[in-house]
Image (cartoon, rainbow, N blue to C red; front, side, top):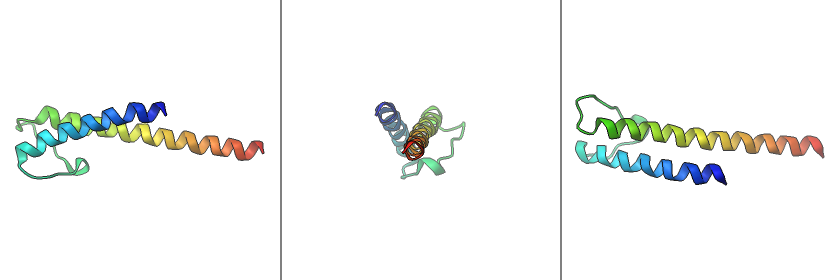
Length: 78
């Protein structure tokens, strides 16, 4: 539960920054394909969007791995 409580605001910020970049580029983009170019006005927001998205994904991956480990430990202990 604490991972999702931590991950959701980070992911929300990631989308907020992505929207700033989309506004500058005047088109919708996916964070995965987002290219941050130094000459962009929204360069900082672009980098933050990618960074926060990576943190969110890593947190969720860690949660899934922990749940898998708990499931394995339960199976072994039965």
